[in-house]
Image (cartoon, rainbow, N blue to C red; front, top):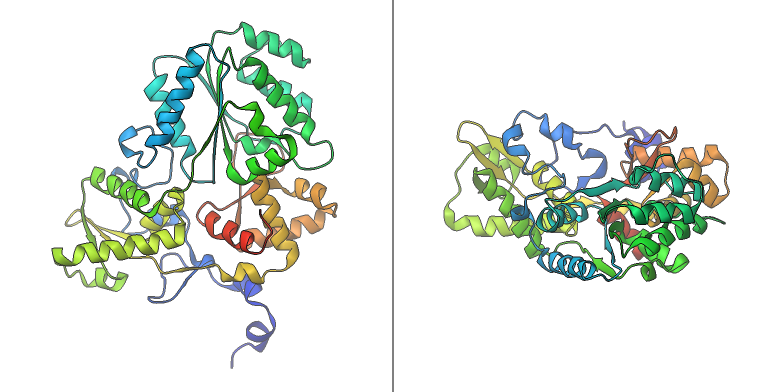
Length: 410
């Protein structure tokens, strides 16, 4: 007899907490459950995964090889124009704004090697939230190696203006602002330093789209930048081109299958069938990823099998990722997801401050969301005792789309 308590009285979203994680076994013809998605490490450790020699083409990591950067020609051209504008003596600061996992870091790396390869670059990530002016001062002193540190914004600016002209890259711009009373002061101090020094140094900042839009509403962040470049998710054609480019670079023979069962039968497909099967694979992959490149690489790795005997790769379409349960979650969890998406990352203490709740309630919410595989801890070099949490980039598009449909993001 089925367990009536589990099957009848616990909502579906909580039953997911009791479901045993599956690694790579997904029922054919069924929807992919979020709780069944393996980590990238689990995929790489499976017996028929790609060897490290080939896996480097498909692991979601930033690239420096311009040949692998597909669909970003216009963004590179705009970056080049901004750079020449700065070389002509105009105050220039550029913001790259796009969703998590869209490839902002790779775009910056390719631009660096194209325009600034033989010169020093100051590049860092804003790993933790700027909560006050003192943290802003400490950040810039570390970035520009100012020793001894200064304790005044004007003195800091004076010191920065003495330094030889630099390309200064700051990633993680979403950490500039915590939307609480008094939170905008540190953001304005950060942006003031950038504004005063952007004739001397070429500033390039990357920021996630939703936090950027929130900062624009609260502090008018766009007015501090001479150029704001949107780095959108890839179109289906560009995502297909980018993944095909990596498949070609791997040098492996590639076969597209209708399903994982067909792969197991090892019946070599006819060439005439390949285009149809390839189209089916990319349609399904785009449906799950929404054009997010990190997510697209993940589903490619999830749905490919390496045959060592023939040095070939067999690829089949992913099943539809079932994210419908998000809309059935209670309001507290949905609001936490919305604030996390709107801030880029969020810690338990930041959640407590935003919602004016007890710490234990914030911890309960975050623990539930992590066990549902909706969020994951952010591992950084920061020495802060408390971890921040991030939406999983694999399902970032699906989660934010659901929140927008519920009018919790705008």
